[in-house]
Structure formats: structure tokens, C-alpha cells
Length: 178
Ligand code: SF4
Image (tube, rainbow, N blue to C red):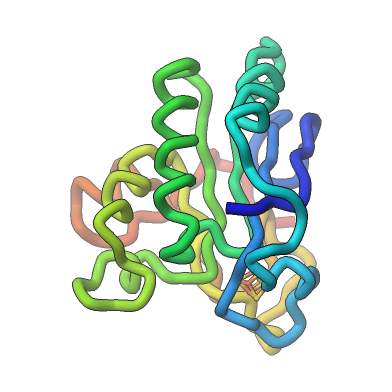
């Protein structure tokens, strides 16, 4: 898996100060995507064991609330094995920090047997998440006032509750969109 950047003090992609990892590769090709260069699976640099160490060190700071993974598309089937191994290490090392993941695929697509993004790793990835921000960016639904997402169709989903109930359950910390 390749990635383009790791941000170590991000306040835009989830609650609190977060470490964010932007992975490469995306087949969604949403109209109006703000970073089409990341569609290329070879964009950026390879994610190595040294990169994982860098990520874990950045997460160790006490004021860092957690990790957010974006793309590109973290849930591309080709990216899922590496994403799962990253999530297992982060969960194991920092059980109290939160993990958010942004995907252009919907929760339903990720859970449907035979659907393109579903792999043998998908359920285990979803089980590591606190919040899945799901759905493609839709230009006609673009809204700059939304919190943590770009278009109105995209959802903030509470993953433990969604997996428990088998349906998408909205996440909220009580703060409304702007
Ligand atoms: S899923 Fe994200 S990276 Fe992929 S095309 Fe859509 S907005 Fe761009």
C-alpha cells in the first residue's frame, strides 16, 4: 500500500487533535473529488514498518485523541490487508484512543456478500472502528457547513452500535453541523 501524507496535528477530520493517514488508490472517481491524484495506487510512497512506527509515535502524545484514515480509499480491496494490520497495532497499543475511517463505499456495500469492496478483512476492519464516515462525495450534495464530511449523502456512523444492530446507526457527540 502507498500513502501520500501523515498529518500529526489534524483538527479537521474527527473530534480533537488527530493523527491522519491519507492512503493511495481509489476506484470511486467521484466528480469534484478534491484530490484526484490519490486515485493512483502508486501515488506517494510505500507504507513500511518504519511508517507504522512513525504513526504509533505520533499517536503516543497525550493530547492526540486518535487516528483517522482517509484516502484515496482505505477500503479498496487491495488496501484492506494493510489497513487491518495497522488498525490491530493501533488498537493493541492505544486501546483508549478513537479510530475514524473515511470510505467512499457505503456501510451497506461493505457488508453485502459479493459486493466489490467486501473482502475477508472487511468485518475485522469495521470492528476496529469507532466511526465510519461513509459514502461517495456527490458534487450536487456538496455542503460546506457539514461537520467532518463534504456532501449531504455522507454519514457519520457509530460502528460498534451499527455492527451490534446490523443497521447503520448515526454517530453524534451532540454538536450540530454549522
Ligand atoms: S472516494 Fe474520496 S478519494 Fe475517492 S474519488 Fe471519492 S472523494 Fe475522491
